[in-house]
Length: 124
Image (tube, rainbow, N blue to C red; front, top):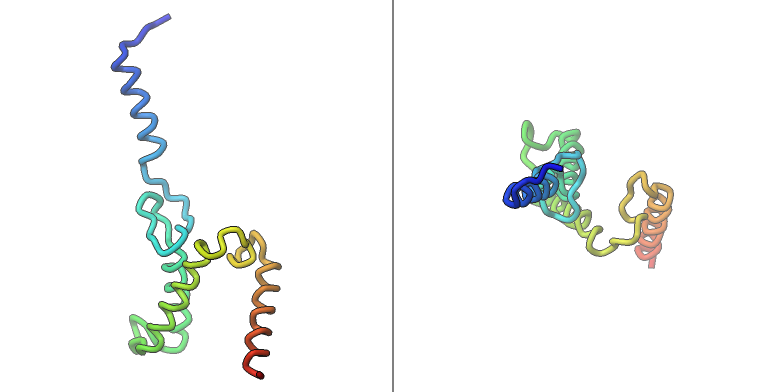
């Protein structure tokens, strides 16, 4: 059996831990909340929402290569992005509120229910 010096074993352990925990890994995933993934390189819910709304606004002639967003449009975009980012904090165990493939039917049902609640409250 080959015995390695103690300092070599310690160095091996440190390198292994460093290599598995500190190196950036881009899995193309989102980063919960409003934070950008410094270690993962992923996008936050907030950033993905902003980008999606930019595509929507571009269809109506607004954005970087067209008319500038109005103050109301910019404010609405931030409100929507903030609300999307808050899902992770406010509803961490409610998959229906994440509206992804994990529980798409429940998300669809929730949206319909919330829409109907909104319509009903406007009637009253």
